Length: 186
Image (cartoon, rainbow, N blue to C red):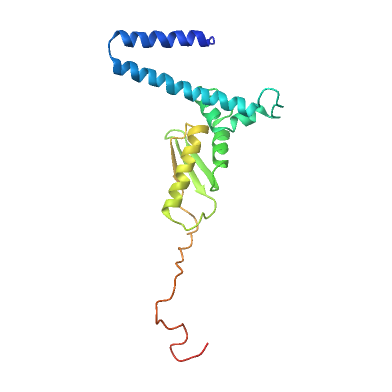
């Protein structure tokens, strides 16, 4: 496959927009122009990120330029989108999981369903279901950039039950202290 120049791509986009305009559907033309604009912004952001990661002109380039690019969500998503990411799927999954705020363990990926099973490594606080859901959603978000083959995430049930949330509050007015009901002094 030969590389398309910017001029060739621009000409092809103009031809498609002209064909849509000939049909007289102003709404379709506006939607197509908006689509082109969104894609240009997306790719422009990706290219800007590459330039930023590799250093400005005159700046010393990073020691591992490819590593910096592969670790970036935007650049990684562009590489994946075009089948250009050099890392295999297990490496990309681990890269995505390593960036999560909550430590998780990869318990297996089912290629047929696209579901990744994760075990939560440590307690993240109160043990609330919303905390588990936030962990699951964070994993999905990271995996969308680094490993789009993963289409679902299931969290394994916690092996050890997290402690219940302890509510600490003021004693109701007039409540006796423990151990003083029988008249003992403390």
